[in-house]
Image (cartoon, rainbow, N blue to C red; front, side, top):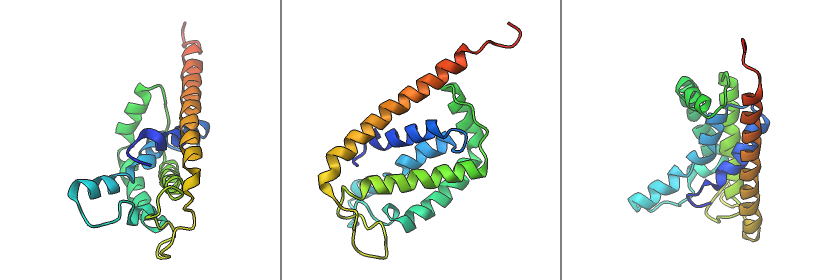
Length: 168
């Protein structure tokens, strides 16, 4: 997908549904971080595929490992931002890692049907998932997932705010 928030839709929905098991900030970052690769290719004019090594499961796994450590290290800062949006979590390395791998693999799986230059199973040089006819359905499902994720987020925040405060 181009540089759009479409990848955030499935991440937000899955993150809200599995908030107990996945670190939401790590998942949302993981869903979009791989698009730094095509952005750098465009900005530098490099003779390199837009969707190169990091859009493979091998490269994505390497990125997920790095992201897991980085997001775990920054979990205090990310947690403060999440709390400002009404989401309170106690991230562990396990929840951060699970979210990092899931978000990155989800990104690859959403992009693979859309772009012929993605080689998800590198070093295999083909893309058996390439199916451009699915692009409309993929974009629509990402948009619907975003709306459902926002609804789940809103319901969680609303329910949290309705709880009686201690001492009141």
